[in-house]
Image (cartoon, rainbow, N blue to C red; front, side, top):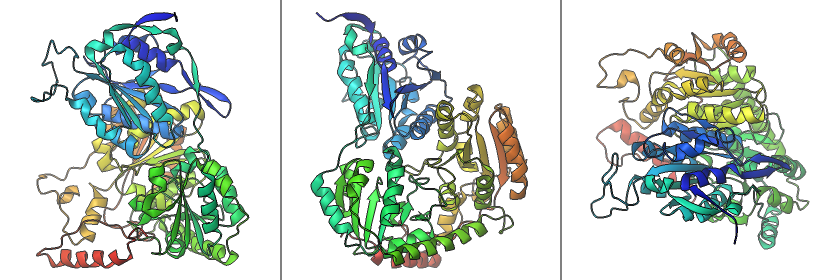
Length: 617
């Protein structure tokens, strides 16, 4: 008989997590870095009891909002290149429901996050209980079932023995390069406290390693044959390059072959800004240089990218007859748009694709000439005094003043485009632009999670968050979390008086400004602006407001020297100062019938580019 130990379900879950480790480059670390938790009646009595006993090895960070906790867990996982994760625990009902958006963000970005959420009583004896969502014809259906659409792994524990199978399966999903994403485990309130005689072996220390799937030899051979026909090849480097640890391999492959490299939003900081083969970011939020060579490329090696529409210009960025080789650990992503697939780890695939092929020198020179032009544009675009105060000028000043290993975080609104286009990478893996789900509110919460990860890896570096006033107002409470936990961030609040980038889209499609800028909100009876500086100070942060980009230098130096989270506020122009170059077409739905001649003209202009859209050939 194997040795057993009687534990509650909650106790066994936490003991199991505490015993899981991961080996990275020969160094062993705890796989779960701890968790984010807000307690309620659905998780405090049982799961809370178990977490208290493990508070030293699984630190629990108290968030202010469950959605923010999920964003912080995503920021943490990104900073650790998906090799470590945090759990989030929420109570039954609205606490758990608040995690839905964060789970969707983690799913879209292929990020590991474990959700341990309260659920209704399995026995149903006290039903209906506080916050229970009842479905009259299906008593098994509740709020937690909504997570099936936004989780890579989903389970509801109905017996304590289930976790012996469920927890390893959840971890296997979160660590799988192809299937990585959030895992959800529903914990009925009664089952959390039920006991079982668990095998001691289940709770023993285990060391995990990330799988490196070797690509199929036949797929590699086909890809090499196609690549050798290329006269104008191009590499698209996505976020998967960093997750694979293949940055050096990508650079070596590019240098050996002479193939120009362009970066996706998730792949920013795969190469240094100064590398001669870095031709810039591609797509809707890209650069003229990358988009020019993308239009001309005949063979495209897409490495570690899911080829979303901002990368492909809604599939207008490439020539109709261009051939794509999809290198990806996930078959689903490798095969997009009828690509020739190389399914496997990016590092191993790049090693296997080495064949002695060299791109024509004239093509490389052409790409570098285009990049030189783009460098000149960025220098002008980010320069002080270049028009009214703008995102680009603020980005340029911070870029000039920050340390190479500082981590930059941005998300929704206009800043992802402005950071992607204008940021000049100083060191590898230092840019986190969340545009997989383009989620407002990620900025400060995700920055908090990234700062926690940085404090474990390189505490001397800073986390720099760029956020607009809209995202700040949506979710700012983790400024307080960062102060409480001594996880300093530098937060740039660039106030343009509302949702200016959507107002720009509204105007660019012929529509009048309506309900985006505060000035154009018909139900607003005042034009009072928020005092972001005072608000940040009320949560314990240090803060100041600067009148213009010229004032950023000294303010940023003060922020650098500060001992806690520091917020710098600056107003920017909502209409002028946008980066106008570097954009591909982007498909948005416009009215086919309208009485507004400006909207009709904009629709005609929008549709004029559609013939360039690839049909999958």
